[in-house]
Image (cartoon, rainbow, N blue to C red; front, side, top):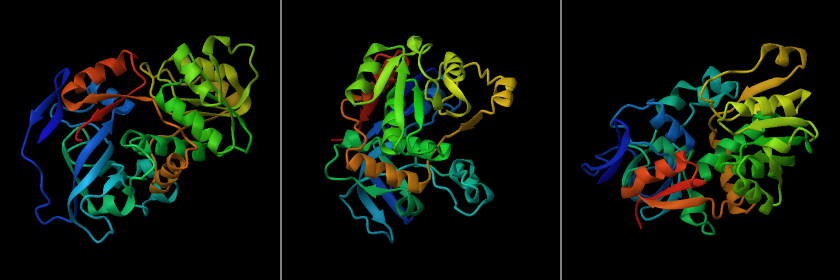
Length: 327
């Protein structure tokens, strides 16, 4: 089977033996396609993942072999996530599921940029769902990234009708804006790229050029979905005293927030990283019911062209890459 691995400064497609269950509980799935996540880009560019790693986790797949106590069957199309919290540790009991040691240790094997993947019984029980019939495979691939946004909205604990600014309108910013609206918030987005501004406007959500925010009203909450260092300045400039800044991005120079701004203005600054199973379930419902629209966000690449998908994403030539693995 084909896999795409990190090899020094490149993503290289190689052949390896096809995986089988070999008596294990769980399923072997044929990966139909896998979205390219911003975290994949960071792991590749910043050399966080070692050579030989198969990245990718936003998969849509078809079950080809199964040994499970669940109701899933061979031939069924599914969506799944890659991490599973234990539900009982101190982190889980306090709602910080993505800090759970078990959560961090679980994954799909070898990774989503592969023709076949092994899903454990635990994956099937907790984070896998049948693909809704009214969604395309590409639309369904947003199940996990939208789940991340759903968790972020919940973690912010905002009042209904709160005025929220989303800074950065890449694919996550577009998803986050729609999730906030679906949960009853009054949303505006901002970016420096006109096409992204217009995309959000076409979805019925206000959006402006980030440079035009100086005369704008202040916001109850600011969601940082941009990884630019200047996004921190935008957040501090536009947040009300007593407001909430939700960080859903890493910045290259890790400059942080000025202590006195947080202290004297009584700001709440919190991060949100990855979803719990309930957030994923809610995400799939938002996609199924059309409350979050992901049509035309993705550009399709073959597995053999995965390096180009990385390059185009890094250069901001596309909004989101979808790696089509199998027909």
